[in-house]
Length: 237
Image (cartoon, rainbow, N blue to C red; front, side):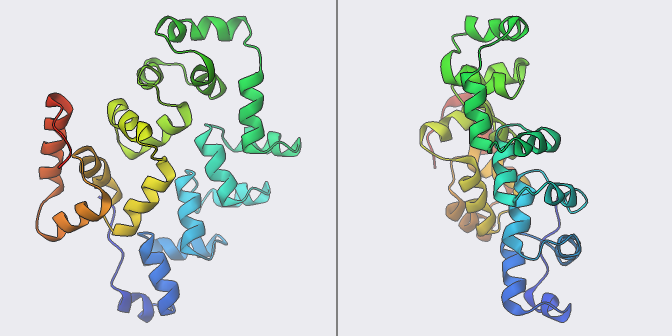
């Protein structure tokens, strides 16, 4: 379990201004982790949170910054399943994350890609949905299960990182929920990241989950309800 952010007074005692400390704490950073980001040249909690969402760490953020990639773009590259080296090459060509996505959608599949995606087509996965998995070269059994649920590969990766199942991710996607917005909403309530999947899977929104936690309901109880919903199709609480 990730450590909780320290009390605001401890941040102030450590040399942070109150407003600055509140920002870092809002994004669930500890003092040591905030210092690591600051030492790496990232001065705000929001920017550090964006880098973290993109899978970047204080140890690797310098490579992304040297490539001229901003945190919001890093999030987009991550959504599309594109790592630093490929993002660097695209950027050198003047290609944005969304343009890279469009390029992948418009490209004609070669023989190898056709063979790799045959199982997807046989499962009824076609069109833009299929292209999203081909672009990311994510074509294993796990990817196929997400595709069968109709979830775009970019969203599927994010829901998977959050700990959700294909059925749970599909439910959120059908409701118009975007992964990054969902993650930000849960972070703001103070629910630990590792608990989010169980609370979300149990049918709680961030505010309700925070209230239940404050009332003494545990993540283990939320996980049990999540299992019931998963296997019995119970409605949201």
